[in-house]
Image 1 (cartoon, one colour):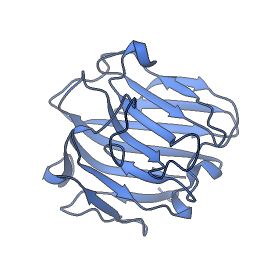
Image 2 (cartoon, one colour):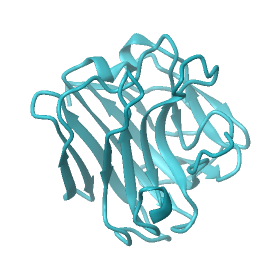
Image 3 (cartoon, one colour):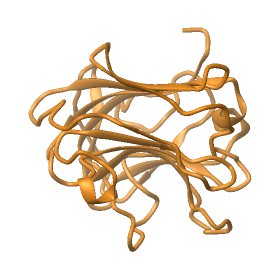
Length: 212
């Protein structure tokens, strides 16, 4: 699509195949056979892809965005982050922006195993949640997940394999993705943070694409 900003294909590298937002391999990132060619293989401990702050990844300032990825989880019980904007310097009172996570327990606002939780935290640090039911995915196969937000209508949606799973009217606001502080992380936070329920993803991620 013409509004695609970046795509990280995981073809034995962390390059952006569309734009200039090349990533950096963190931890024990490796590669394995994916949905399309190779994929990022993440160990759930320290592996992720870190993308330096850039004006083009500041999708919160646009009229809306979509984040799409193929993923094959190794666990449906361990909370994990697929994609998030993260401030490793903790320079603001909130160190997360948009987060797209899985397997979040009910005690932390999710629906447990096999659920998605998106938090479109805004620039003032206020959370805006979109939560799917549990058990919408399992281990052992690839799924195509998409998180969207339209600022005009206020609607945010989560799709799985092209099917709408949940849609929530969050209202109109500016999601936190400012490049002055926030870098984009695929597969986890830049480093574990005490009290942060979702850490690194274990499994495969492929063809992760950002639209804005």
